[in-house]
Length: 175
Image (cartoon, rainbow, N blue to C red; front, side, top):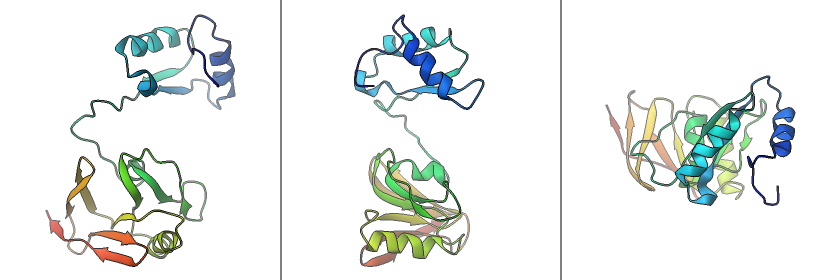
């Protein structure tokens, strides 16, 4: 949509979009960031969506909560870009992460044989920006946008900084 107001008494656009969903009860997520996350807009979103057979939710990005986390794809989303196999058996750059953390990310660094060579090649070739990788059972702890530490529940599992020059193992504390 080039502009205008969604959910403003005339629901033809909303009806059209919901009709495109491949679900009897589609999930609809409202990101009210462009409007400064005004509480009245969020309330109105829920009020207006009750007339539609869908499952509404919202995601606010201002005033971030103290803890955000995720595993695998749930970790990928916080970065600008990442490596994924979500679109088929071949690993590739995902594109379009939330960008709350700068650079790229690769999960399952030691858990899937093609992850490490694919990620290091994509970074070296400039397809992905430099970033971080984590072995299975390892976690990268960020405070704001700064890496604070890497922790692991398994001896030998660690995190890495990956640049065009290669990978650098990061100090990892076993919990």
